[in-house]
Amino acid sequence: MKRKNLTYGLIALILFVNVFLVNVSAAEYAENESGKKFKVIGYYSGDLFDEPLENLQTDKLTHVIYAFLIPQEDGSLIELKNPEKLRKLVEKCHADGTNVFIAVGGWSYEGNTLQPVFEEIASSDEKRKAFIENIADIVEEYNLDGVELDWEHPNASTAFIYEKLAVELSEALKQMGKEMTAALNGAWSKTAGPEPSMVLTDKCLESFSFINVMAYDISNADHSPLWFSETSIDYWLNRGVPAEKIVLGMPLYARPSWMQYRHLVSMNTEYAYKDYAPTDPLESYYNGINTLREKTVISLSKAGGVMLFDVNEDTNDKYSIVSMIDNIIKKTANLSADEMNSYITVVLNGRELVFSESEGYGKPFISEAGRTMLPLRMPLEAIGAKVRYDNENRIVTAVKDDITVKIPVDKDVVYINEKEIKTDAKSVIISGRTYIPLRTVFEAFGYQIDWHGSSRTVLLTEKERETN
Image (cartoon, rainbow, N blue to C red; front, side, top):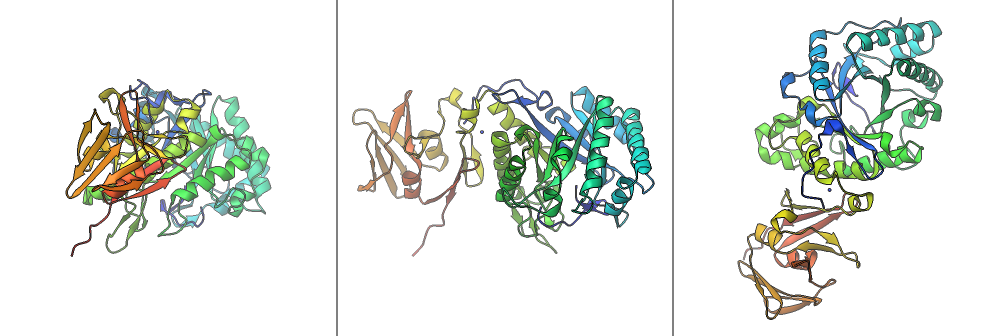
């Protein structure tokens, strides 16, 4: 993971639901229709943060990756600064059924990049052997479940020795019944990415139990956009990595301020729902809860997990990203692959609208004509409209301020202040619930509608009304 001086480093390029919540913890994994386990991984930089270990939600994580174990050129390892913290972390995680890996490497140590150190170790049979033996000793001593190789980064001239190190370390860990993963770069298209991604061999990729894809740190103002998460997943799928082995990395820090998500939220709770904060002296571009929810849904549909860098930067309240991810997993635990691919999230003015069938709300769906249909009452009441239904004439009337919208059932028109407007979908009644065409009705009440197809998210945002 990219940290400079064991702080943040600089790098370029890089669910509608069954509402009866299933008693499934993240640590027991979420399983999709084919039984693949969805990973929820939290990077835990033990020496960087003041967040107490007790606050780590290990019951909602499948893995914790402890950072960092620092290599030296002769294959030896620098002693951990806080070994007792790692022991306590392993004890807490294992009590919740959560695996603990240790990350070897990182971007730099005490101001020096670690890439030359890895190159020196990997280029020597003797030093590789010593390095692997030393890692094995640490794994055994601390009762760890695996290792993450965090060499940042191999290039065309070192790809061969990277492969040798990765394959040999993986084999040694397998003999111990342990796993190995790697921190790898994201990519900007299905077929193209940075050199460290392009040069990795298939043999090397096959040695990893899964890969943590660092889909962040593109630039300051475009730190970790939604599109980059999609292209990063698509790139590794195109390279032949099975979906269940791809874990999408998601940041909990901002650029260029390097402020933590938890600190931004403590400044202003509205920042939890945004991707930008006008902090001083440097601005903060980051991922808020809505963007991270979309990334989680995308990963549930086409990848094998999500990873938070760094989980210490999360909150421990209703704005918690770990809790949000856990909630999505529980809500979608019983969905088939097809159902997951039609899961729709509705976000109204930055807040998720949760449709509970148990409370009679129904659930959004896409019509055969490709139109998004919403259960009528809850979203309209959420924007402050008064709703009534004329059973005899089968007409829904919604009134807010000076706007009256009449919605005849089974007809492709609505009446906005008595003016007939043609719609591209009919209102319908299904299982006793009325569903309305989203766009026409909400635009009538002054809302902008945006659709993110990859995560199947509807964004409803109230426009400022013009005043005379």
